[in-house]
Image 1 (cartoon, rainbow, N blue to C red):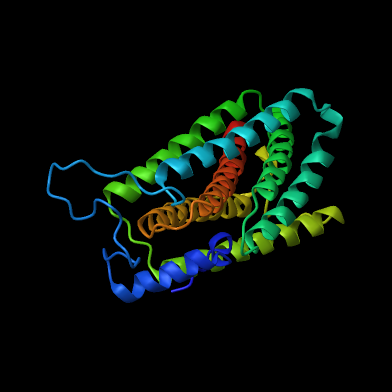
Image 2 (cartoon, helix red, strand yellow):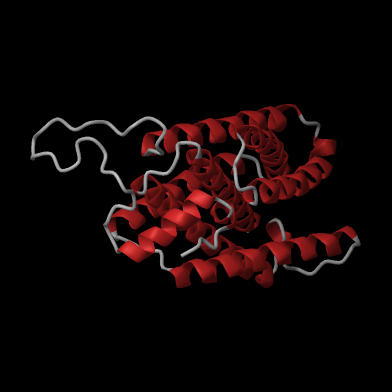
Length: 274
């Protein structure tokens, strides 16, 4: 079963391992040779995973590097970007981020250099976007950051303890919804540049009922994509993918976390305006 998530779909390793995983059945290993220590008696010393294999620790480390880089660039942009340049920089960096995400996502081999470029561009966007909201509603950025990590932790807990299963139908529905939302945002942005207000996206008091509905749908899609990210990471570790694929997993997780943050920031502005 080939992944429908654009971040993982171009990965030959993810595609091959998912197909094998689906053929062999749940819980069966998808590699030919058993790792050293497999099948040892209970209580015997366990051999650590071989080098060059994707692990949870590796994904966590690379995710921390990426998110830390985004946070650092965002903080510098937030603190030192003149308020008169916030809107044009947020717009330009947002478009650049969209292009870089597509470019990195559709490469078969992910490059740490392009991941680093993404972290810089994304950081500039997050910093400028946050400054724009914080100028209107002081302190809203701190609230949004805390809410984002609480939402991510709650989603991870629900995924693990409620044993949420990511089926092919779930992937298909969420992926179609995500691309449809991205198309809607781009069209709305294009119309806004020509002075046409569709009411689909707004900030604070300028948001109407339609903007509220779109934001709620966007939050649902972001959380659903986060669940898909957790599933891909879990499958990648289980299937012993190459260690280089942990960059792809960290990239996908960072993209989703930033999306979740921006949507929470927008929703908080609705409440702050009231």
